[in-house]
Length: 189
Image (cartoon, rainbow, N blue to C red):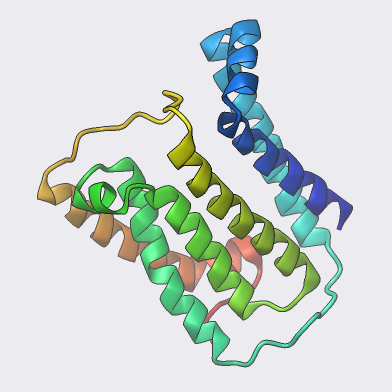
């Protein structure tokens, strides 16, 4: 469980740096823009590896036993997650209307998994990411743009088609093949 917690702290910690502009600017001043981006990428990757490894090794301590129907609620909630993830990087009307599709994808992903999983490691992991996404959503409204994420102009309608079709294909791939392969459990009954 320790590796999981360290991974979460590292991963979320580095992603909180932009919420504190003074810290971010000081790091950019010391490392330069490219050095800061490299540090951000390396630390993010380290955090991701630690939290995945920690989650896989965490003991299963059941806090509550979710009813069987929560699996279906999670599967329905996960449907827009993949569309939002693609829409975050393929500008269209979805991105223009949602504003922060990536954060919405994270919060929906976390909520879906909190509903369907009652073990302590899942509660810690998904609860942390839900809190982070809500905090960052609020913080985004109060801070100037960092320039790390480029704001592209709204694309044509085909970008929304790409986001929806690509998101649905990715959803099916994850549901049927990737979740069992990467996570070790199937969301399907």
